[in-house]
Length: 157
Image (tube, rainbow, N blue to C red; front, side):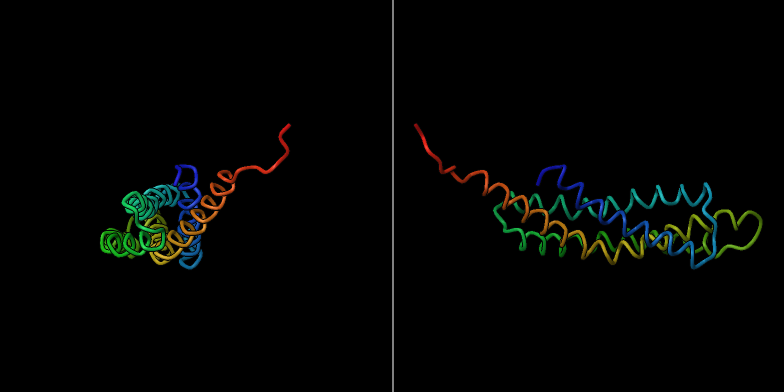
């Protein structure tokens, strides 16, 4: 899979993270401020890392002559634990900041809720959306490469 098509796959998980982040902001009635935007930047980096883990491992397995579906299943199986560990550690690490009460706590609460909401939604969706999008994009690229390999039928003079 080319880097450009991998970007298509990665962008779908980023949108799911942003949806979760904005939903968490709306549910907690926090405002969009500089701290929440910093939280979104941090969130996008973490979510990208999770998606890259799956895509990169799938690409390596495909180089070893695995089929696309088998490579996706094996990549999901092998990378599930690292993704869950980093995501849950970050969610539980942000809970004290999100629940804090006191001086300047309301400023930082939004950042924590953005990260918690975005990671929760992306954790669930990344494990399903990234492999599904990878399969779709790989199928499209496979069909296009087969069309290019077909000899053209035409008149030769």
